[in-house]
Image (cartoon, rainbow, N blue to C red; front, side, top):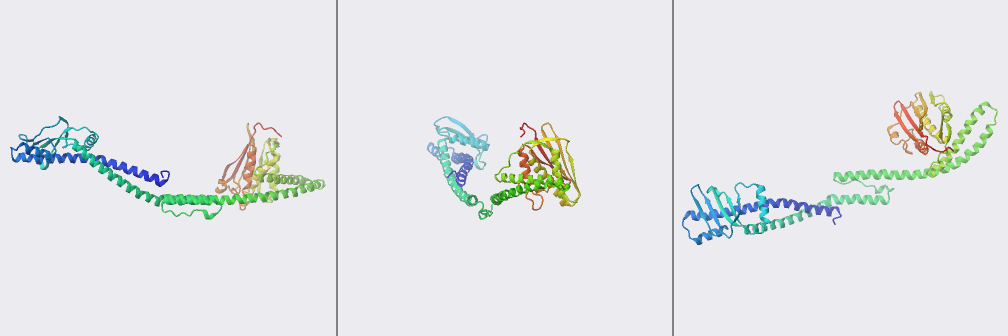
Length: 462
């Protein structure tokens, strides 16, 4: 039972109530001792009135008066000149004197605890003020056994009462906690267990209904988590289906493009100058399309093919990318700038690097064209001691916040309406396969800039 919330709450409640009762018990016993001693002083004062009424009383009456008062001796000082005394033999010398006139709470509590745990019978002197100002002081001597017995009896009564109060309070709190806290929490757990069995079933999503603010906040957070998880699972299922379809299409498209490659070989034999100029670009485009299909088939296996590293003329590669984009813009006023050191050679997979640069430049071109405002795309590169750095900048409108948040996430980082957001995700994966990084340098109303960093390292050339 102690491993349950309600059981532990019950146990702690009993403990805390008992602690509270102990804090009440100590001053209560001290107050009981004080009242007990004051009552003895009052009885002694009444007994002394008999002597005041008649100066001469016999020994038997004096003994009876002292016995009724529960003391051995009584000294009543009414003024500086006169004392009334009742006396009887004491069994032992006086052990301690207690003045009740100016005793503070700490002193009373300390004396009470000492007397409660002291088992030896002793004789003590008690001094107090007479009731109704019937003198200057009254002093008695008495045994401690009766006082201790009365204190123990009183303490046991308080203890039993504390136990009853603790049990009743704990029971009431136990049932209150079960109804207010434990039951709603168990409801949340049942929803979680039911949802875990079928997370794709939206009927298992919790509906917040708790009246307690904290539990309702937990239910709302769980509801949001379940909704997002259900949507993610559905998206994952759709992506799996889409991946299978893309793999099939890529397989057939690769066969078609392979056939087209055979026709381009014949076209290259043409004597037409225009055909001779355009045929190599057509061959390169078809070759890249075939490679893309093959890469898509590899991606369907959850991995890109490893890069085939070789020496790449970056200037020529960037020129091919920009030339292809020039053909796509038509008459739109868009300029391209290349800042590539002459003869700069870097080690990379030419097809994969082409795909990355083509994605970045195409995205920049589409963003600028969509605004209808003339712009510029600039590709620059520098060689550092340990890496090659390539930057692609544009003067477009910048990326929206949602696109920046999910920039390299498939199907979430798209900028264009209808875009899939795959381009940047694939590009980042391709650069990562080279051991490099693709980062967003900046994006605002003045344009967007990406940086490609390919480390040199000690990779063997293929």
